[in-house]
Image 1: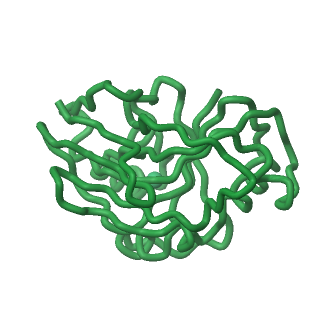
Image 2: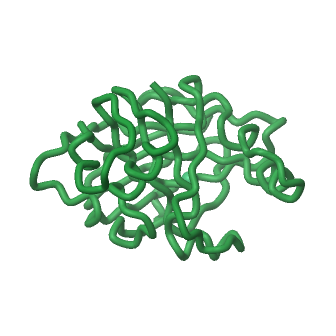
Length: 204
Ligand code: MG
């Protein structure tokens, strides 16, 4: 099992960080040790500096697959939820400025926060029509709709599978809308999908 993350998949978010709009999906990986399961606390570490929340639709794949045509891609998804792609933003900016890989800023322990409600993928599910919202201590800090993705979930699965074989249990974080920002000690983070709370995490 692995965690695949898509960067810069919403125009307004790419712009807020001063990044170019990509012409194909930008992806990177997190190790399984990055998973933070429901009920576990987010722990801030001094060596990582400021940590930003990035609320994302997360889909789980349930088969081995490579070179997947776009038309077949959604059939690989078993379930979906919301997640937080926690990012050490100062560290990431330093790495980006030096042209170095992002892992130190993206792949650290606990950086892939998973929602507590896993929703089954059904024939009627439209992954590109979800209203997603993150509240920090009760105030809305991120709000978007998955219809605004630059690359749809089917585009992402097809593209990634031409480079990396997908395996059962793989998680794909599909990118974040605008509004990313810092978290701090004592914060309560709540993710809403079409108005239903599916992710809750406390920062120690
Ligand atoms: Mg992200």
